[in-house]
Length: 158
Image (spheres, rainbow, N blue to C red):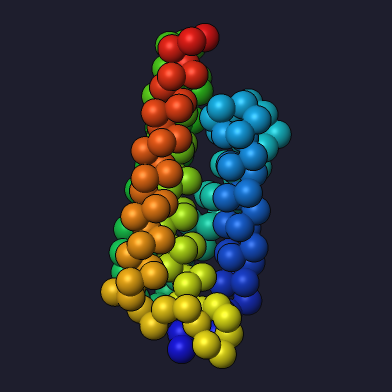
């Protein structure tokens, strides 16, 4: 069983869950995570906090893993999306792809943590090599590809 969450871990988890929710809502409502909308701004701030708290924990504890690498990639993509936000409209699709990719990168550790921590006394999975984890991540990746395809088609029509 994984160790219990620290206070920072609890805030990190709450922030990232809300960020994931508002990102999915933005994609459903607007077809993308729009940094000009309230949900897009919330996503940017909450995801940045989630990544920075993860990176801070690595700096403090020295324990490094794949999730921390994903946090760095997410931060790079968030900065790229912010730069693209300041550019002309033709970069909107690239920004949408970058932000949707940050959502995928956020969902990977979220799925793994959920499956290895819940339910509390009998988690669904014992580790990342469990079939349920691999299957869930495969479904997540296929959903990501489907979302990207849908976004590209939507941008072609507009």
